[in-house]
Image (cartoon, rainbow over all chains, first blue to last red; front, side, top):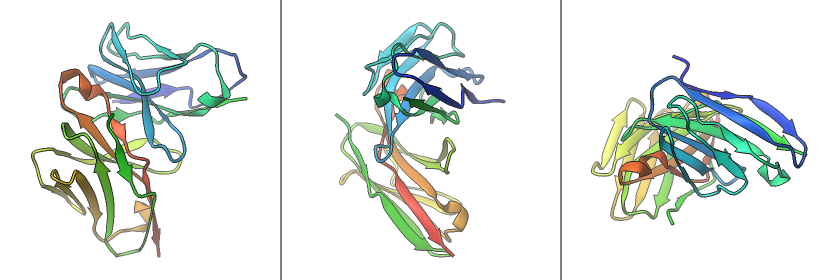
Length: 111
Length: 114
């Protein structure tokens, strides 16, 4: 079982570039979420999904888009990267009433 | 909105007990979690407690929940150097689709000295 797989592990972008952070899970979990981790601020929820075709905004959604076309995949898109989006991004998945399982993270730097 | 607060630092000697504290504001919290993060790694679930419980014990870990004061603690017995990490408290609100959302504290950096 691979669990939650995030790619890439590291990425450097220039301001204004776009990219997609990939997240895949093989546990058939209904719920998937994206968080960003910044020093001294814990993890903050960006977007989440309770099933294929259903997404909703979290605490810090601006500048990010998501879609959920399959149960397994939940990509996070940065349309026009800004230095403020430099962070570590974590994807998580779970079943209802169960704890979230986290991926190893994507470390993103925007110059 | 929901808020979760933790102290930022804790330093203990190897073999002592560690107690990491957390307070939360959402009285409708259903589950409360403790995650561990080692340097450069993802989050590892340590334990969690349902809101109708007062205590949960799992080997060296003891979780205490005081719902009246909205206070959660994690006690690590016989702390080892391998326990040095960041510990996050998180809460999940009640209600079906809300289970996809966790609110995290800032994290407590635990340093264990030999």
